[in-house]
Length: 513
Ligand SMILES: Cc1cc2nc3c(=O)[nH]c(=O)nc-3n(C[C@H](O)[C@H](O)[C@H](O)COP(=O)(O)O)c2cc1C
Ligand code: SF4
Image 1 (tube, rainbow, N blue to C red):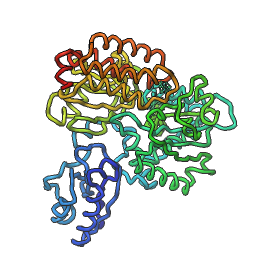
Image 2: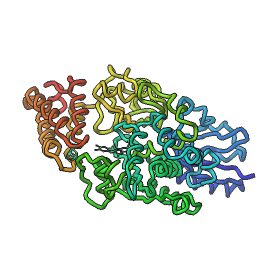
Image 3: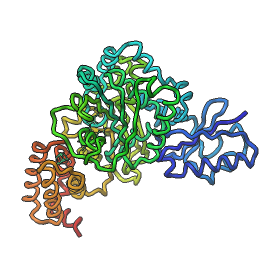
């Protein structure tokens, strides 16, 4: 009997040698005459254990990690079935506390299935969502998404069902579904993991969206820094077309477009400009993309995770999803732990965990072993939270109340060696580099802000210059056309207000030396 051995082909696993491990398994199995089938999967999202190899046994899969090619002869030395006695054995994946305590809905299949096998996708519940949508009809499908409470996972948290209803209710000869897979936020990788680990899920989600609002064409806009994701998605589209799941028979097709690496091209109107072949510059709203979007037609533009969550909502019912979470934040969120953290990885959980639980219990504290001092949540435009605010629950409204945002779910941890004055400067410099240049507060203000922060760091009249920064942040917040300029004050002002000791003369002088 052939034994299946699962090795992730996810970019994070490949970066730490998964391809070498897969090749070594095949070589060693051949040498020992063992019947082995290496299946390349996505990642389960436990990055500190990557490459994490899973071996099929009569009692289910057992996992080993982090593996290197050198560990492979030892792993296979005792023959098959494998024994769990190997020092790198971490037991059954589902028993690893980091996985056991998750509520995996969007990521239920990621790391388990062969991403490019439609048979595997179906065997694990794939296409049940589309089937139910078809049985409900278009209006009830949109209602189901609304009832689930799903809010956009790209950052703004806008209710997905309301966006879909606006497009469904707008009459036009052509409508579009656009998947935003630009994933520019620091410390985020959830979109990439789905594209590499469960691409048919996105295809199904977009097909449901197309059916629900009356769109026949979809685009996936992927950042160029994701070559593996682009390759897997392109192949998945071809396979779906071959089975009639995309194309004329399905009344929906998908094209993949690659971005050129501008953060602002993740902003929806800028993305649409870029898709139309123009320079990625923000459009003034109204009109909303739902009324006049891609090529002037009504367009649903959603983050990848929003679209990839829809199949499960349809398959298991809106209530099943809406029963999870807290307040107006319903369902689950794929939290992505990054930065200086011991257990970096993807943790899908119902809304409501506190920041402290996420950093200390799930993340295991910092990788350096020093105390965690600051956490930036929600990407480069998110606020920095000190330990005193670690009781903040992961919830859209709770973060807004504390002048922060959860954005796309990125949590970047810093230890006590972080210099918050430099982080504040970095936020302004980031805005200056990434600004699309359309409006003055962002285009000019970000440059002046960086220069002023340089003066503060050099100890040049810090009190007066900090007052200037506060004034500038007010202008950015209320005078910018989009959230790039409008939200840059969050990281800047949270650093100044919540870590004031890093902006005092003695500390600045010490840091400047
Ligand atoms: C500067 C900027 C960058 C953004 N980058 C992304 C991104 O990379 N991915 C994303 O899904 N949304 C991004 N957004 C949010 C989008 O504009 C938009 O809200 C989102 O695609 C809508 O989908 P959703 O409702 O499913 O979240 C960005 C917004 C701004 C202002
Ligand atoms: S805030 Fe910045 S990125 Fe946004 S429209 Fe204005 S110049 Fe462009």
